[in-house]
Image 1 (spheres, rainbow, N blue to C red):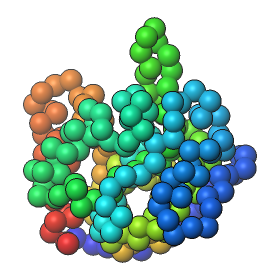
Image 2: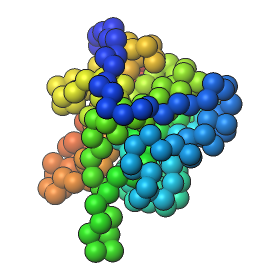
Image 3: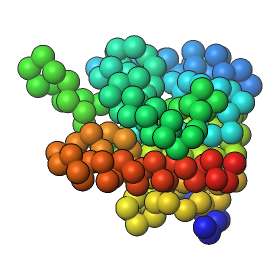
Image 4: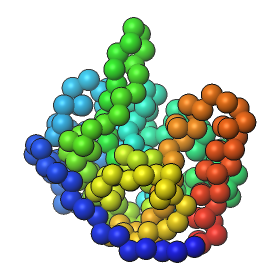
Length: 216
């Protein structure tokens, strides 16, 4: 298993970034994020969904953005993808209660479809606008392991487009963590229609997460 050193590349700035307060208090940072209007997503989302979990966590997971259920509850990874992540962590022998979970983008981006709200992928401007909050979270948490769940999370951390299927499964050293791991977002597994393929990809996901236990 190799570890590479990677320096994050600044993302293009297309509008003013958010300005998190200089504080060492997680709740103060969370309260400030609730007022963020750095991109238009706040207009339609129910609320800001900030990071959650153990503040002394060695492992921090970064996802893409809140989903419908997360937007309503104000908590990350509590919907179907979160439950799948829980199952995968249990299979990999990683205790989620000792981890912290957050998202690259803190507001739910969606497209109305009747009574439903369908997930819509954040664009570069929205990722960039929210990045100061992610940086503030990681600076406060100082994790030993950072896990990018999917391409949007990896883009926010590395500042570049990441081909997840090519770069998954080995550790990179970044400014945020001694070991940064790229893997798929659990929601991608939920979209696989074939049961056999879904089970195979779930096993691959578990194997990626098991690296955290192996190198802990």
